[in-house]
Length: 195
Image (cartoon, rainbow, N blue to C red; front, side):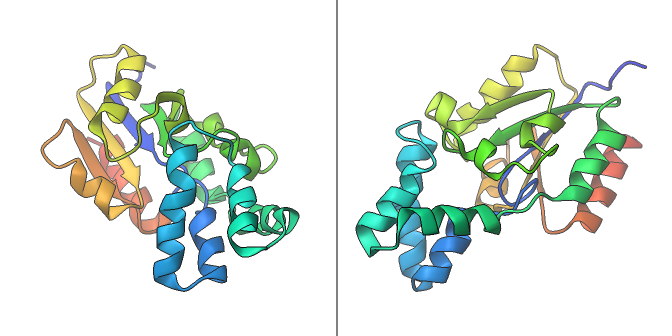
């Protein structure tokens, strides 16, 4: 059976896997301080300047929390969204194209991946911000992934937990699906499949 000319792109952190850095920083610092540190630590790594583990080095430099402690705690924070992995493999793979597009540091996918559940394993093609120097919501980042498929898509969707990223897609060829929970998402994806 031929696939529909439909592309469904998934974000990794907050959709396929839980977020990593912000929840850890929120366990250490006041909320506003955690958010400012998030930008400080992830901006360079997400843009290809550094490895994911550099974040633990910077936390140690700024707060004195040992590197190994930060690594261990961040490893335990992010868990795979197993029902979503299963849904994608059972319902999407043979019917539509699947992409993975994520603001991500080098080494971050491997860091969080649980055995048999590497985030890229559910996608036909994957593009990560550290590879391009671009991050969401910059539309050029989306265009790069879409262009990699070399398919004239009739519909393109992006599943993301970030309201900011979803709003930035308004007026583009990509329809945003704001991820809140699996039940709601599965219903939306079923509607796309049954068009």
